[in-house]
Image 1: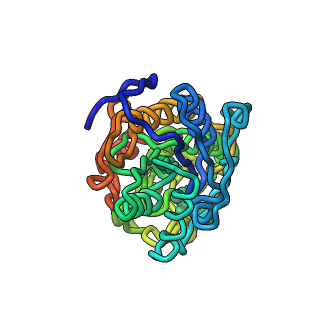
Image 2: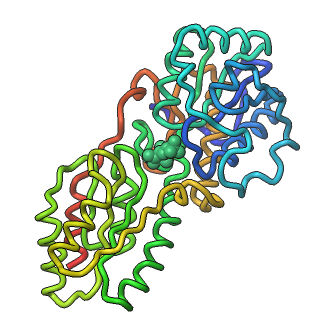
Length: 336
Ligand code: F6P
């Protein structure tokens, strides 16, 4: 991994034009990343072509030139103005062939993909097949992408969920109730753990670690014996945890009072990006353009211990970040 400078500088041969798209689940801060790429590229005299609707737009040639002016007033907006999609079609070599022809038609010498794990796998395969270097800016509220400590959108999603938990806590306390709150994260528990720690939850359930409903009930019951009158249980979504309903049903049966359920869902995906996400997105966007100027191999542009780094796509694609189980213990220790 190489640390990169965060203001762009050309080291010789550079493409005349590059492409950019946002793919997979949208994440707050994607717009800030596009803005940074377009403006940093303009400073280096590189033109940028945006493709709408993710890989689908690359296949169908939904191209539009992006100038410094076309990315004005978006740094503060959630979602992605280029729009996004999850493209099953891009998994086929026929569709990737069409996409490659569109890159050639536009004379595009490098591609920047702003997206999550699935998008990174697509970029790795596409880059290998076409020889057009792809650079991935990690953006996913799930924060499950290998090679970076943080992905764009995670901080905003956690803050949004925490704001909801704080509100739930008010009514939970007033009414002496147990609330089970389901958060997003797909197959990983990074959001759940951050929200449980930051929101002072009694229990957290994540996909990575098997749980027993009996044990969860014991914990909440025990906290009530210690004098607590209200509790928050944070549950990661998805088939591996079973979601929030079985947990609430088990608690209702054990405690003899109804546990309330809140599913935060896509509320966590929207909204203005936090300051941290805007900063991260801006630095990664500039880092991606610098990687292109340096003639770097296809890479993920990550943030590791506060530094912007490049990691070869072949080293990170198809592998998830792993959750530190000590964080689960910390949630439980701090809720005593
Ligand atoms: O990957 C981001 C994410 O928001 C996950 O947390 C969630 O499981 C999934 O996307 C939801 O996908 P969709 O928007 O397609 O329902």
